[in-house]
Image 1 (tube, chains in turn orange, yellow):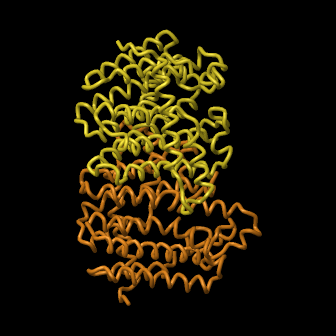
Image 2 (image 1 turned 135 degrees about the horizontal axis):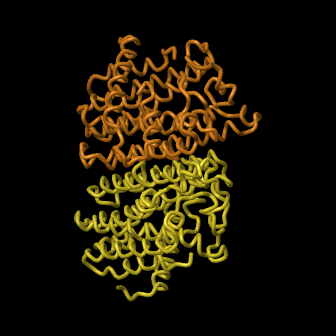
Image 3 (image 1 turned 90 degrees about the vertical axis):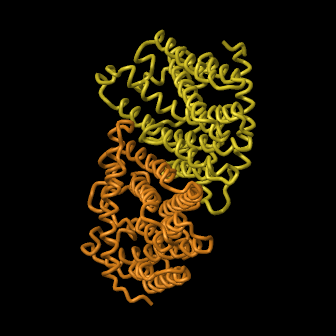
Length: 304
Length: 304
């Protein structure tokens, strides 16, 4: 197993987040063609403080397969736009109805529901516009677009959010009958799909072969699952002070989580299994995988 | 000027709409990977009866420039998905709050707001996934994706909807001060952008040169403007029976229209100017442009 301490991964993620946020701030600007309110609303969410985990994975997997940083920016920015869109729409009154995200008012609280919906929509199109850039090899654009679209759409993240919303709104009796399989499906699609896609996109811009892309995808999917189970566990076990947000919120809102489905101990075991699966997948890729292995370990050793 | 009668154009549009709707129905299907409710909600709106004007333009402009029907399907389906997405989101309570569209309950009335928002989102990603298909020449995919994204996003349709919503919500006094320029900007982006993009996409899959693409785009933009001014005029001058929907609805909801801004007579003149602009642009493209010229004439000779 890796010997890198969690603090080293945390430092790497944090310093990347700062650098990448600066790049986004510089490069994702709008001229007068986009209405000002819409541009403000898009930038409010896209540039909100965040861990930038998906972009980090694009760059890390890209570097592992020999891609320059230059070609990683477009897919990294695109997947962060998709992530930002999903947060705006998930927070809407018709969805999770959240007023705060990471301590700041949610997009619709600041700009109103109509503009928040439109800003989310515009972020999706901006993501694909960003991928269709001249800085990328033309042969890579079609697979990038196809992968990001699939990971985001009805078979991926949007499908997962649909299942999550439907599950939360079903009767309590039905809810308690939710199986591990259904929770796994929600987490795999809602969180796993974009992690899987981020890792594969790093490989695509590096021109990696099909087997490598498959391994990168498996790494990302398992990593996403591990992160999500760890989040579920933190919501149950951490205090609100630790989290920087209210703990116990998932149970309150009837969210379908691993602890609610199989209990805390078994959830810990499944998170550990996902980490092992991620590490096994990435070890099959040639090159220095220590950083990504450490990232997998880090996923379940966080305190927030 | 063209000698084709309007009835011929109407017949061509109608028979295309039937054929294209059948193709969509056959080809846009979902396996178990997409949650059933989401798949149903997407198909409910995508397969709703419609004129299929944007797909018609893709095929017509494609044929003019020598493209086979085979390569027109993907861009035609993609732009119809974007159109369907826009109708679902525009009808939401936070936007235009419409319960009926062409006599059928709107998507959120049938599936609820959350699923309607998600179905709209999924249609956007499906549009780009559809463009990244192996049936297209790889060299055409990046320009198709870039064009569709720009036409849909903050500089295009979504930007137009933002301006429209903002205008409707401003105070009555400000509203009456709305200039022709602001109404033109809303119509050009909200309707014109997708018409422009449809025509250009037909040229792109035919491998048309830059000058031809520019002419096709100018044709589409003017055509979209003509259609939209004609719609505005029909809302004022037609009876509800003619329209198959309530007339006078625009004025009631404070929509920014040409007649409200410059009156009926000047609006008619501007619609005629847009038609002339469209015809001038398309005549510069070599080949038989009579059908497209007739389509431009038809735009302002409709009764619904």
